[in-house]
Length: 346
Image 1 (spheres, rainbow, N blue to C red):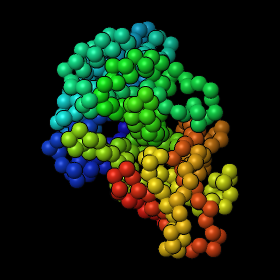
Image 2: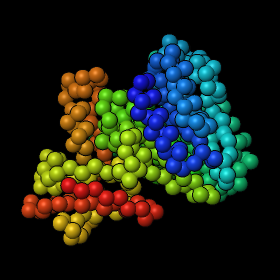
Image 3: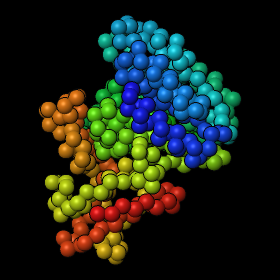
Image 4: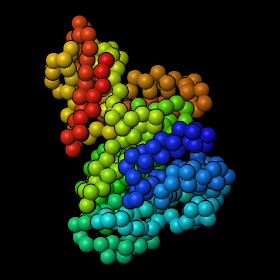
């Protein structure tokens, strides 16, 4: 909680000062309390300090863990915050907050109850087909962490087990689903839904300054123009131009002789090129691997010392290039979906 106040809040305040308060709002996509519900007043104080309207999503670490039913588990959240699902409008976009954490007494799974599906149908009946709808929820409807870990199927706590019902209701709209839960960054499209898995302000549970996939502690900043969303990841304590971390040759033992660029918010549509001593050499190859700093910080039965169950997470937003051993300087240039360019040097 001290780090939230000392690091995250001032960073968010600075971001808001740059983009302006008039139409800005914030969303906490769940896991606000890390099971310490008695600290809600301190979380609320942090939100107030940010100085803009703020909406909250229920996460699996925001529950009464001794409760035996889903309804009872959400009681403290509802008392402090309000309902667990609701909607609102800003400009041309319709926003929906859902509760997809189903608590069954001994644990939870990703699941959207029928009453929410029915409510969502009624809610969207007032929204013109084809409009942009943004859904905030906690557990991703789908993600590919199990694929990257070479597991056949996803765990029931990592996806929404009945997501097809949710997709059916959202199908007539241009839908973005923004989530937390995974402590990593991923963009994917599932059944036409763009799912944004956002990095966490706490990174790997406040053990260091990065998430398990190497994404820095931080948050997403979304710019809505009309009905179009543009986004950029904001790393806590860094300028918004910082969008990658570079590692020298041989940092990844699986890719000898290659440099590594972790471009955490990149989608496959980004282009990532490298230059040696000012000469453009070509596009780097996107691949799967472990972020070298994450390996250093989190790999091993005794690391990190605070929570030794944290491990490096395989990610697909790594880029590789076989750089000459004689190169004196390497520059990497990443270009995002809207033509914005970011650079870093080794």
